[in-house]
Image (cartoon, rainbow over all chains, first blue to last red; front, side):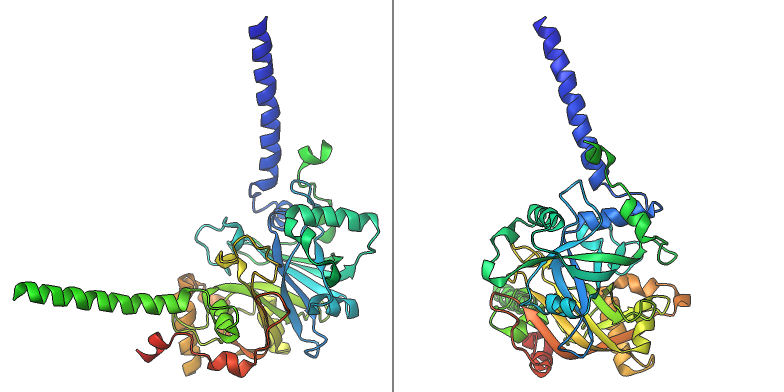
Length: 205
Length: 205
């Protein structure tokens, strides 16, 4: 009897483990390049930083790119919407409050999954999300969700100085430009991108 | 006699090697963070890619960041001026030909020298060069220099399809924004940046 229980437990353990592994794999492995929405969502979810660009107030409307960290959700439950933790001590947040037009550019290169391809090669994917960079209401449900998403991926943020007045911003995506192979940018609507379920296993849990 | 010659050769060999090592170290090691010009030039020379932003023709003047490879010279002889190999099949080159305003943002993060700091932390340096993205005359001496600089750092570029009409662009820097520690952006003029001699040993050779 004891042996039976032991083997049952062993099977259940491995089944459970298998489920966990599948969930992780669904999130982390590189999707097929022709599954455009999956690839775009994977690129955004797997990366932790990119360049966020606004129109510079100080430099007469020039585009101003800035290195920022972001998160679109806790690992395995990305939403596709990038959230940021920005301070108006920095030009990016100041610019966005004056003119919302913005873009976030992300490369596959830092993920280390481009083999030997050059960062500019179409074989090494890149995505640019263009839209409106907006400040979230500090006490809103979405800001709460965003803070959890940000602090999980970027634990250092929790300790950033209170006096610097960091606030949560999000990019309301209006256009998607993604190249992940030869043949130019892949057609992908914002709706297709946002509705894609990154990890059915994790979401259904 | 033979032994003397041998030891002389050995000493000369190590002296030569030492010189080589110094030259490499001067180029590759991370400068003191208070040596602002050195740090900025190091960041630009050590990185091979960044996000180049232009004003989008298609998206009503929105800033449009794009992942690109660049080079400011052959390794050890960087000039500080970033050169690019772009095609007008891509929006970035098309945008620049209409409106030169542009910026190049680069992070220290992919160099792996930020220890455990978050990519957005001021401890992990970032630089944004803002200016005019201009097309070089294909047969000019500068374009020749730029092609050598680009193809040395990005050998894959040499084989990129002729029919895609890749051309050499450069960023004429007008403003520099660099954060490499707490306390906000470091003051650095374009003149201080460009005149800094990255590697005296290599340049004097």
